[in-house]
Length: 240
Image 1 (cartoon, rainbow, N blue to C red):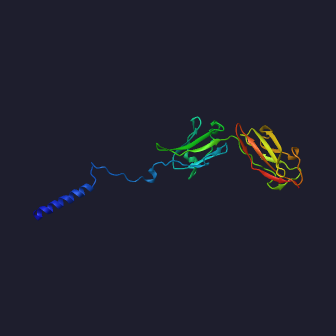
Image 2: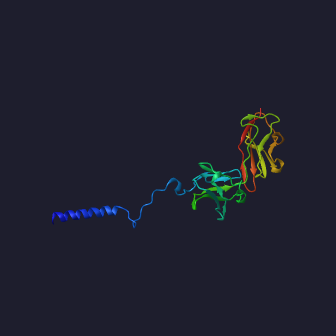
Image 3: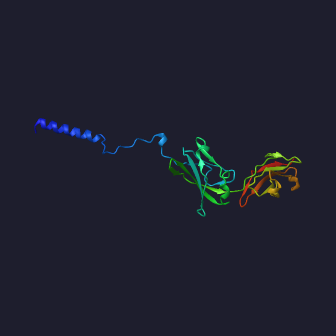
């Protein structure tokens, strides 16, 4: 082969390689990476409460704010399969990191079957894009645990002391339990209807038991809802 012809072939090969590397009108051009403002919508992962928690009228559902315009919470009754959707939740009501939503405030909690187990997940929506989060489990409980307001734990009983606790409209009745820790015997169970104490409940323990000097006692309050119940903390006191 002559040198001139060889050089010509080499030049033609180089031109072909360069031409293949350059995009033409007929070639596909790879898209540029998504800009932050155009990013695909991530799923809004649930944050709280933990899966398996009780859902009462004061419980809020919390999830990560992924920059959506709107959110919807979907409850599913695991026994019946029935789904209950929330109203649309505007992202403007969320914080920069989390969305905090109370089902009671929006009338959804009242529609859930008391005592039933539900899954809940969040649907995020933005510019026609829609994503679904993973699910968490909650158990609907319309009874709210009382908070004890009197007789500090570990203190001494003083004649005239009362047992006092908070009430809640979700509760229909209360039981006060008093146990003698010295003997191990329960000495009193006092039943009160919620109508008897719409704001704060209280009883005089010595109207229902004998306070024996040298004995230590503990007490707690159990609240009952339509089907469920919830218990307060337990407190102890001694009789001097």
